[in-house]
Length: 342
Image (cartoon, rainbow, N blue to C red; front, top):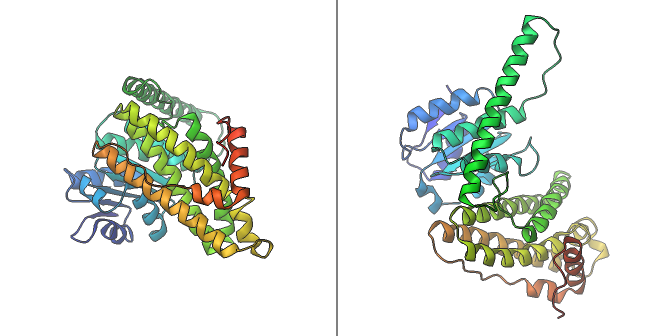
């Protein structure tokens, strides 16, 4: 049986060690850890899914999305699912970008127990990851398969309906996916998700900076979804609006800086740019700053403290006229309007 329970090492390192020889890691700090580990292992089967379940204490070491990224880098699983307390995070190399996190968010929004949320997440990801079945002949076997599929569809429909009803009760503005990105933030996040694939492709060709940037973009988009989902769940309307203003602006600027016409082109054609190394450092510093602020804001929401914003990207776009111009173009295309003139 590929099950490991936590030892006494650091949370993330302990999970990495356990997942090097198994598929499921459950901290002994989690109630019913042995039974939960057995249940999850039975559901995972032979699928390339690594699961790590922590108590709330693990949040002192890293956020859920950060743990997902680290486990993905340090283990060989196609998909990683992480629970820190009752908060679920997930990432996958075989599903579309953001799909695993969407599945985890939807399961969490259903409002069940941790075991139920994890179970629903695992089952849905296993189904989404499975290859399409080959066509078979008719007869009794075909009838059985058809009935099984019909039953699965009914169950999935019931689960989705329950999740949607509970989510609407939690907040009327919540979308059916369980994510709560406002329109002004969704545009930049979608743009960043698209760029992540391009950076990952360049990274696969041997560009280490591009590979690191792809991982950082994935962390930012995942944490942005986490931040707004948690704000919506807690009904913090004023904080939600502040975050919408903050990240509509910051992620828009970041999208312009990471655009294929700027940083991506600099990485591909550094000889065609003035001060290419300096430009790369400027953008990477901005990415790090926004990523750190998102994590800090999530921690503030969890602790029910007011959001605190310290990052300014004005220097980034102010020093480079082309970035300021592209930022304006992005906002016009996204319907966010012009920025004030410098």
